[in-house]
Image 1 (cartoon, rainbow, N blue to C red):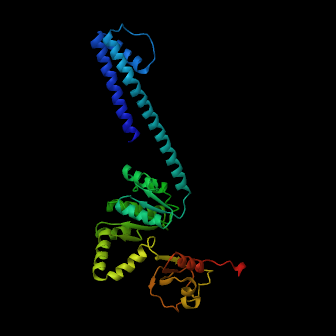
Image 2 (tube, rainbow, N blue to C red):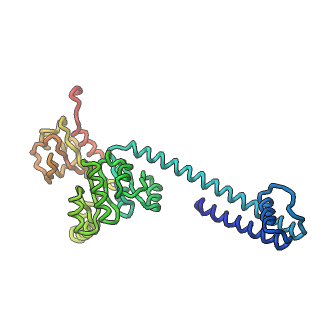
Image 3 (cartoon, rainbow, N blue to C red):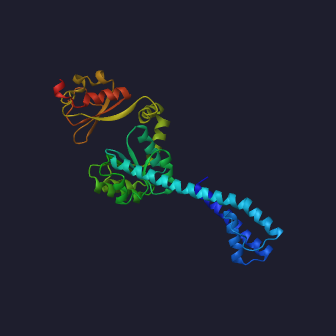
Length: 337
């Protein structure tokens, strides 16, 4: 039970006792409203001053009942108030620490919106072990995100101040996942103006929103309904192919996954071909595409095609194989050769 609810319930019970006691003293002893209320306050608080007016036997019974029930109720109310205060101080401290941690993040990912799509995207990013920040304006969703361990900026993602609080200038990507296409459009425009190098992926509900989001600065646009429909059709027509796609897309659950690995200019792979560099033999990973400097993607690449520096390999493999490939494509210290 929330401390706020407990405090409200305790305060209501205490208020009822105060009113009932005041009415009781006035009815039984014929005291004035002020004297009756003062007598109740002294009794419930156990101050111990002298009686405000002489008490009859019935008045003493009422006083005993007020002491019995009133003291406990007052103590419960005070306890609930202290607990609520401590909770708010603790929450404030947690948010201060969370904001400090967010300010230290670099090359992280930002998920705007923590609905069904945003939550699924954040779960996938978390499973990959990459740093991530959630921007969500709704209190309930923000609390759910925090309970799951997410770093949360509880603000409206359509405002620049919210994106700045999430560290958009230092982020590597942003996912615009709110429910409204118009809001996603504003988020994309704001994010692109704040970070021209940011990789932006936007969600769209309507087909006509895709072109608008691209024009606004989104690098990729995903329509969940269309993607889901295509996956269902693929499962019906080619279930084996769909299983292979699931195998790579759900790499954190299964063994294999797909990863993009840049080729460093000083890497021993740069200038060599996949065959001569022995990429498959040395890493165990299978290269399924090569991304050129201009972003052009070549699927099923020729094994004798030279790998240009600053290009990238798109490969599939398990964690160990992809780690070997990353090491193969990294810069090699010439002093150690």
